[in-house]
Length: 223
Image (cartoon, rainbow, N blue to C red; front, side):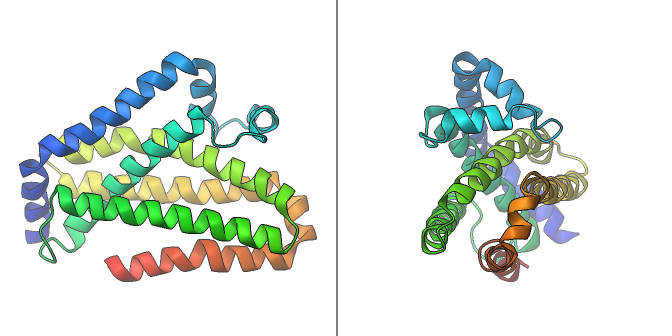
């Protein structure tokens, strides 16, 4: 109970920089709405309809790091880092000062995690000559994560700015995020089941080494 009130107090004292994080996120969304209106809409419903994912893959496969993906990647970093920050502030509020500095440490960790995972994925794909499969799977994972970041944003606003039932909104947001991330993996598996079954050994290696292991390490460090 004490940790809940401490977390609420910490969040309340730091609303200015948190508001700036949300402001930057919404500013990027305004840019995406202006420059990529149709694609932004398709991204928002991607978890419920995969109709356009092949179309955008064929369009982007020569230039995965375009402005749409880079802009959304920034949103991912900001939103998921803030989600980890709020979780950290509740689980271990007295471990270290919880402020903007802590948030930027978490943000740096998230950036390193994504960079490490991407380059290790690329290295393994090159070693096992699976570049074409890798490109398709990584494209789907990135775009599903784009959709998840949009869906996590509204409940995260409730967590930060609602004074009552802080813990309730936080754990609901965590539960929603977990369900969406599991759904993401199931959708990638479903979309590429033929490829996975043909390369089952590499898929199991990839899943254990690059997906499950980092998450277990993060959980061990935070809980």
